[in-house]
Amino acid sequence: MSKLEEIVTELEKGELNLDESVSKFEEGIKISKECNKILEDAEKKITILINKDGEVVEEKFETED
Image 1 (spheres, rainbow, N blue to C red):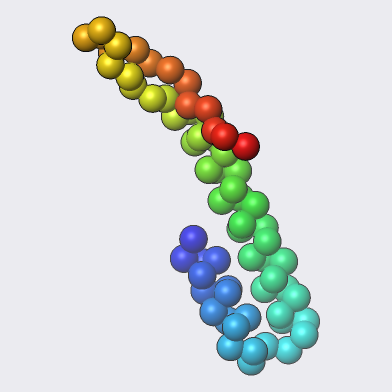
Image 2: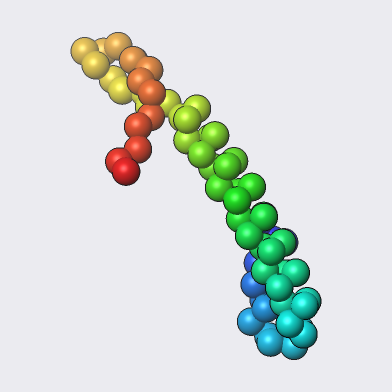
């Protein structure tokens, strides 16, 4: 995430030439996709513990899309 934030800061400054900007943008997109994949994988593993009748039951986490 820190690398992605660094790239955004560099792009926002507007001091890079076009080629450098495109390269940084592509790098940022790649990092963003990697982060998204990590989050999706983690989301699949998350479970919710629910107390039912004094018993803890493990259920799979489901997102609302």
